[in-house]
Structure formats: structure tokens, C-alpha cells
Length: 316
Ligand SMILES: Nc1nc2c(ncn2[C@@H]2O[C@H](COP(=O)(O)OP(=O)(O)O)[C@@H](O)[C@H]2O)c(=O)[nH]1
Ligand SMILES: [Mg+2]
Image (cartoon, rainbow, N blue to C red; front, top):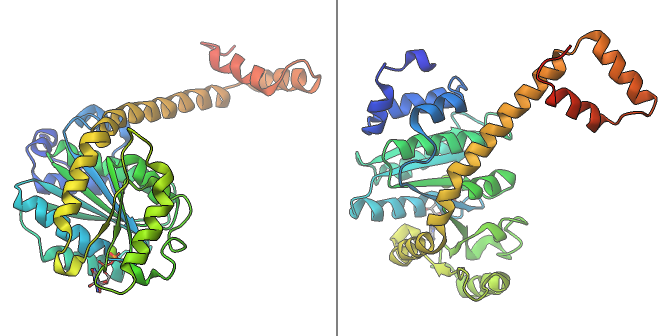
């Protein structure tokens, strides 16, 4: 599916919240048949007003169950919600996503749009695909975009970069709750949740994580709360909803503003890189040899050659 397969008025229909069109645009993004330039010129970059809330943490900690409770609370308040589940399993028909769908389905209604994205081996590409998908969901009028991702590495850090608020989940039966959280992940959390608070040890886990994040709570900055929830019983959800709202007001709103600026910057980098590459590729054999000789004679550095090629408007 590519741009040509979309209806002529896809932009209008997307902005009017047409779920079929939203779904097809996301397929184009997954298939890489809609590039950033086309996408941003058609729908803009984060021009809507969506909050982007990431839920991360180890497998089995209760992310899907808690996200499901969160979106149910938002739906009760009348918000339009989109969910992106990032499937790290690499199995397109893997059990993880299937399980998530069933859990989310319990709270599904027409105001919720669910989509899972699989890594499909495209390492660095996943967080960029997530950014694009979140952008079209924003354009389609989502109030909140919830992203579920497994807290195991770089993708989570990148997704946190994209989120207006990041919620990190832990649970008492993770053994040492801090050891279970990969390095770097703790620092990206805006809110920490000890889920499965019905299990022994939740108070200890709470104390450990409160201690581990204390250094971040500087005067005047956001105080990272450590909350307790029992997602299976909907306990602690109100506090979580309030904390996410509070964080959005204090910090998340400002983060949103920088999102479209960062996107513009990355488009600019891509375009500049393409331009520079094409100039290098278009060098004549004679030019290459001249630069190479100058370089080997120690007259000119790589950086000088690159600057000379990039700044030339034409290449003789
Ligand atoms: N005891 C208990 N079990 C929970 C709680 N939340 C989720 N679970 C269970 O933990 C398992 C994994 O939950 P899931 O939401 O799929 O975790 P995910 O892998 O992080 O998305 C499921 O069997 C849930 O029913 C909770 O608060 N307490
Ligand atoms: Mg899950």
C-alpha cells in the first residue's frame, strides 16, 4: 500500500478522524511507502493537541493491563484515545501482541484506536516509525496516545524522547526491583508505578525506587512520584491519571512544543545529508584524484575536502 492507494481526500478524511484512512496511512508508514517529507507536508508535525504517554517496564509487569485501565478512565472522561503497542518479539503473529489485543479489547469501544508495531528487525527504524504513527494519530484528533513498550533498551529511551510523559512500571516480584530495570531506563521515568501491589514486598519496592530517584527531585523540578497499583482490580488508577495530568501540565506540554521542532531538525539533517551525498557521488574521477593527491600530500584534511565539496554550488 502506498500513497496512490489512499483516497484522494485522505488528508481531510484523516483529520476528520476516519479510522479506515488512519489505519491505511499507518500501513503506508510501516511499509515505508510514505516518507517524512510527504507526511509532514500533508498533515504537519504534531499540530494537534495529543498527549503522548509511554508505558514501559519488564515483560509481565502488567503494562497492557494497566494501559487498558488508563485508557478506560480516559474514555469515561470522553477523551479520544489511540494505543500503540510496540512488539519486540519480532514475530508478526506472536503471542505478546495477541495477548495485548485481548486485554485491550475488554475496554475497546469506537473511541479507541489500537495498533501494534512490530520491530521486524528494523532496529533504529522502530522509534522513527513510532514517531510517524503518533504524528498521524495526533492529526486524526487523538487526545491521548498511549504507547506500550518493553523496557529493555534503546527503543524505550527513544520512545521516551517522543513521549510527553513516561510511566515506568515495576512489580514486587521482580526480585530486586532496581536490578530488574535496565540502566538508563530509570532516568527517563516521569512517573514510577509499582504494579501488583497486591503481592508481598510492594512497600520495599516502593522505598527502593523512591530512594533511587530521590536525586532527581530538585527544588522547582517535577517530583517523580512512586505510585502503587493493582491493575487487575483497577486500584490506584485515579492517582495515576492525576499524576499523568499533573506532569503534563508541569512539563509535558512544553515537551510537546519541542517535538515538531525536533522533527523539522531531523528532516533538515536528512535533506542536508542527501544533498552532501549526491555532491560526493557526482564528483568526477579527475576531481576525486585531485582531492586525493592533495590529501595524501598533506595539504588538505578530510574536513577541508568535505567543506569544499558541500559548499560548492556546482562541481567542475
Ligand atoms: N497479581 C496481579 N497480577 C497482575 C496485575 N496486573 C497484571 N497482572 C497479571 O500479570 C500478567 C502480565 O500482565 P500484562 O499486562 O500482560 O503485562 P505486560 O507484559 O507488562 O504487558 C497477567 O497475567 C496479568 O493478569 C496486578 O496488579 N496484580
Ligand atoms: Mg503487554
